[in-house]
Length: 254
Image 1 (tube, one colour):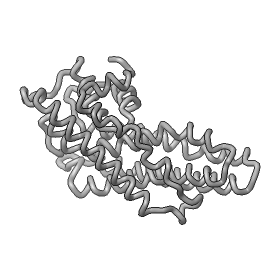
Image 2: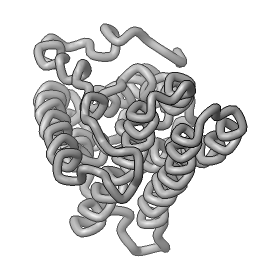
Image 3: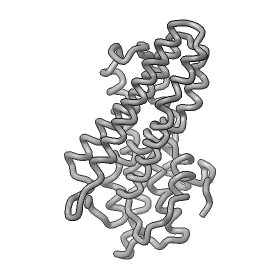
């Protein structure tokens, strides 16, 4: 199975390319936010995240309409060869960063039964791993800070990234259930959307604070944080479209 593909290959289908402008949305990058956690602009960020979710739902609907027929021909799960890669593409096509989504998720050990809920869980764990590793990064940069304002912003980042990691972990914990209990329910989905949206907000607020302070390390932090931002965003997009994705594979929440 190829570990990565071009964005053109992932998108594959013209109707998706028609709305590929979604991938060019800088969903929170251009929003100015104060440098401290307590002075965020929650309403503006919430509206922006809601706008992103609307686009992911539109993409999910298009993907569902295009691929549903192929998966309703058989009651069985897709086979594990090329159709496994196609199944991962179907999921990653609803995200803002399909290339990083596919290149990572396609390297996972294939399950005998393809399950979008388990793929979502895998995406969450990747996001959590990146955030956990990232949470200590500001400490190393504080030693390099040349002015008190950069140091204060980095300390905010440390707290914000710890919170983001905790929010993603909350989502993972909600999915870890015992026998006979559902990994997903309507109420769980709402809670998980809130947690993942908060994790995205935390990461963006960290960067906004550094930019406001004209920190000399803002680009380094931005580049280091990019993978965690992409995987958290991808996880939220998969969650927003989970019902359509499950339907595509003849599944319900379980």
